[in-house]
Image (cartoon, rainbow, N blue to C red; front, side, top):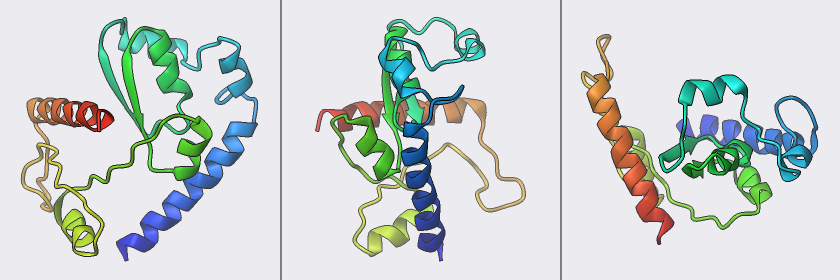
Length: 154
């Protein structure tokens, strides 16, 4: 059942990638980006602050305009996306690694799709009191960034 929804969501984002790559609007403009304009909004730059020399992991990066805009700001930025169409449109070197945790990951691994169990730092999973302490979330993020950097070197 999970696979059905995953595939439907992936198919939708593959279609979005094809459409968004072609459009020229306030959200996506490959033409403006290639001419040097940042895709980042003023509030994003203000909220995040200076990034020069900092590491940034951009989840759901689509075809990478924002990720590359962060690089232009001086960040050591890496983008991750599950849409094969978005990755193809980004025209960058791609390394594919599956990550998924918990029971979903175990089920996928049993079907031959390697999915290491990545923790989130959460507690009391699948209960009404499930939560993630801020420090645990921060540490989990650090581990994911470290793993992403290792995978880039593979």
